[in-house]
Image (cartoon, rainbow over all chains, first blue to last red; front, side, top):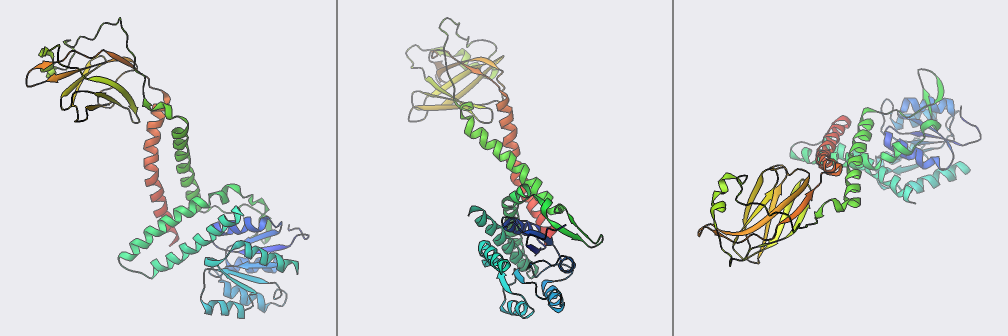
Length: 127
Length: 274
């Protein structure tokens, strides 16, 4: 079972290599890390685990990140969970859509420094 | 700091691969081939730089939800076929090249110049011996001219791959004959270049010199006049075949094949993921 004393990060990412990279990144912060590699599993985990923050990829099998965001923000028990998007999609429309659906921040993979992402998540968890 | 940079490289490369796949999907013609080749290279590079993620992570701390079981459980990451192949392929190839590198760095003395020595009371090889190769009958019957300068055999180099290079000096544009003793005698001849240098390469694959001492005799030869010089002082060298020789030879073959193996893995992984 997940220890309650640690903050929980749910990483939603379908690329296993990147999942491992993100796990390694946040592992140093001594967080409890949960992972899901598709939107449906992520939604199930969010409902049961109620993570302190979600790191979300948008392009995934079964349920994409937009639909996941829509479902989470429509759920009164989950809507306050901050969601940070880390995606390959870099179009202005995609960014605006994600933010309008409730994403707190948006990182594009091609120009993201993971240490900046780590600091962002860390600060958000300290609030 | 280094770890962060490395993880950023992994992130960047996965993004580049994604973008390249989008290009391939919407493309036709020769551009597809180019983009697939680039994808192959990128997948191989990603496989290499992501290898520590498979070796260094302790997945026991990861919590994953199984919808069919409805529980949380600490489990290992799934090893998909693609990643297993990457891990195995990169691992094997890396091992081959590491061994090759170790051989190159730590054992340079195996190859290169060899020690030559002479035995003063040893009877010189009989160059009229019937063991000589029959086609060199002209050399056997050549008249010895005492005033004709003989070439010098100065250096023997053991070359990687089972060859020996014999080097020496002589009269420019003259012919040098080299007799190399084993159970039979190998006869080589070559022309001395304008700088007075000559080189003869002996391939072990063509004529295998057994382990042990071998005599080398060189003399000048003029085929037109049917004359030859006196032989230079006979010199000897020792052939030793260590496990390093055969290991190195096999490793070279493996290393050459590893490039093809990696290419095939890259192609396979690319098609799996498009």
